[in-house]
Every structure is written in structure tokens, then in C-alpha cells.
Image (cartoon, rainbow, N blue to C red; front, side, top):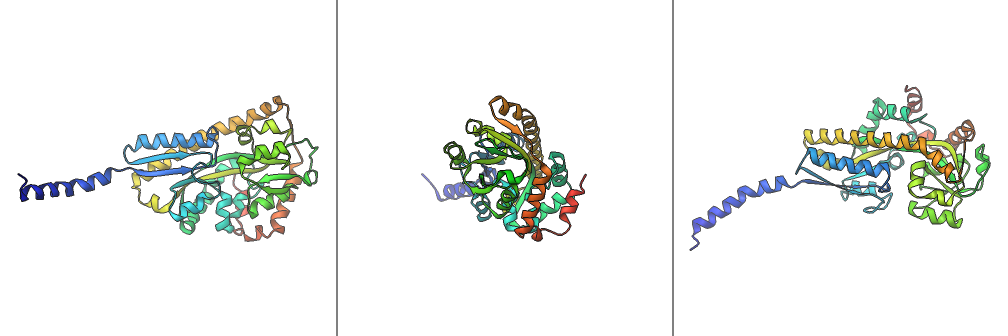
Length: 329
């Protein structure tokens, strides 16, 4: 026979156990990235997931969604800011749309090489950038990762020495004012297009080429529809491990420290692998029958700088920031 005392005791026991059950539920992090699953970027995110979950068992659960399988490329940032997504690999171009004063981080030829980029992003300038993104955009950057150095990839061979030699070339580039200015500086006609469409567009001749780090071209098998890479070195590109700040702020200091630690480990894994790939991929493409050529980089840099000025973008950049970046050794 169930007595009133039994019911009260059961209710009390449930009330005491419920908070504990809730507290044990892990915090869910979904990471959306456009990176191909076999690329170093996505591989580093899987490593990040494994290390965080091992270090914080039952506290944090992470799922990685490569190939824009969860959110279409370009929609992750607004999804984070709306509270619909916890984490993504955010580009400086996406930040520039909301913080044009920091648009220089998306500028062509602003970083001399990987080491220069790393010193800037890991130093005082990078810390100021991270603080501005957190306070003005509601997004916490826990580290930067190297996406690669972007090169021009052509469907048909051209003798390219200066931007004038790329006149009339329809080159796939992401959309946005910064990308458009960069493309015009390279001498091409920038043509926005989703990356999954590029292979068939190059095969059919709908576009004349695309620009990306060599590894991304390789993982998308673009050597099958190409004749040439022009090593313009036009963009040494960092992307950010970006987390919705409301979610980040709910983590304990120990959890935040673990996330930062493992983001750095993942970034190092990515960066070392990608740098090694970049040294080997020229030989890979040449063996596949492609021409790999080097143009006059000074001519390309001067043309790109002029386009940023003509488009009114460089006037929006924080005063003195270009000089501080250039003087970082």
C-alpha cells in the first residue's frame, strides 16, 4: 500500500537527484566547417574533439561537421550570433564585414609568409583583434589556424608575369568586397561560386580558374580539370577557432583552459601538416602534368594595394595597423 509518507519521500529523492542529473549532461559543441573531411583543417578539428573529450570526460561533447554539411559556407557566423551554432572556423573576411577597421587581416600580401602571420596573430596585435571580436561581435577566438597560402589555378595555360596577363580570366572567388578587390588586384574578373560547384565549372569552361591553397585544390581533385598553377602567394590565410561567447562564458576557467590548450595542439598539427604538404604539392601537380609558374610578385602586390585604395577599403583600416604588422619580426 502506497502511503503519503512514501510519496513525499520519493518526491524529495527526485528533487535532490534532478540537479545532479542536469549537471552531468555534457555541454554540446557543434563545429561547422567548409573544410573537406580529408583536409588538415577538418582533421585537426577531429583531433581537437578527441583531446577535449578525453580531458573533460562527461563535461563537453563535440561533433565535427566538415564539407559545409551542417551549415552552408558563409552562414556559420550569423548562426553563431543567433545562438543556432556553437563553433566554426571563421575567416578574417567574415570578421571584416562587421569590423571593417580590421579588414587588413584579409588583405593580400599583408603577411610575408607563415612565420610572419603566426607572429602577428600570436602577439599583441592578435590579442587586440581577439578582444575586439569578443566585445563587438560576441564571438570568442580561442586560436588561429593556418589555412594555407592561396595561389591562382587556371583551366588553360597562360604566360603570366603580371596582373595584366590575367585580364579577362573568370576566376572563382568567395563573395564580398574584400575578395572582389583582391581579385581585381590580381587582374581577374572575380566570379563568386560555392566551392562544391568549382570542379564541374572548370571542366565545362563556365569559369577559367579558381584560387585556393594548393592542398584545397588537391583535395578537390582540381588537377583533373587544370593546366596550371600560378604561384602568386597572394594570401597567407589564417582562420579562427570561433566560439559563441555566451556558450564560452558558461564554461569554467578549467574548461576554458583545456579548450585553449587543445585548440593550440590542433593548430600545430594542422600547420605542420599543411606546411609539409605545400612543399610537396608542387611536385605532385607537376607530375600530374600541370605547369607551375612564378610571376612578378612585386607587380601583383602593387596592383592589389592600388585596388584596396581605389575601392575605399584601406581607408577604413585602423590607422597605423599596417605599419605595425609590417614591423613585426
